[in-house]
Image 1 (cartoon, rainbow, N blue to C red):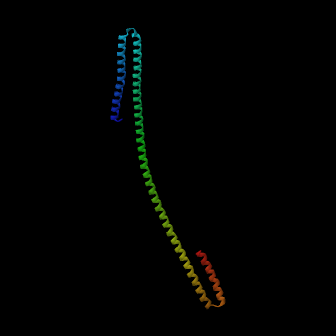
Image 2: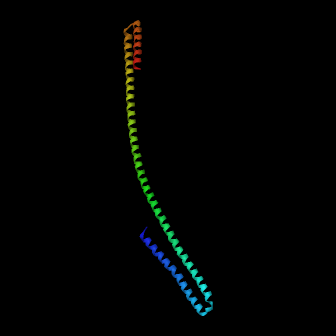
Image 3: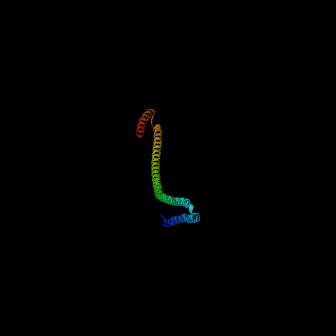
Length: 191
């Protein structure tokens, strides 16, 4: 607790008690003085005046007691309020610490996610590059095979043309059937 507040509250309580006791003291003194004057003027009314004085004294004592009780209650309330304030401060410090931890953990989590995203992107790019290279190789092989087949077909057609011009019909038929057999065998090999 702040020492300045503590000192001020003690001084305020002392002043309140002092000022609260002055009023009843002055009132009792005035009442006693007036009672003595009344008894001096009318000695036969002494019992009645004394009863009234005692009744007034009791009344003033009750008031003084209520004032003191009020001061005590206010002091207890002040202490309770200070205690609640300290608890609230402790909770606030705890929440601030938790918020700082959450902030730090949140930032580190964001950094981890960013790094994971970057790694994932690099891996995806590598996979795409591999797929691209495999596709290019496949297309090159396919194109090479098509070129070979066309060259082979043209060579065969040229050979057939040459044979057609050189051979007679019967030989021509035998050669064609032999070539068909060879082509069929080559086709099986290439497929």
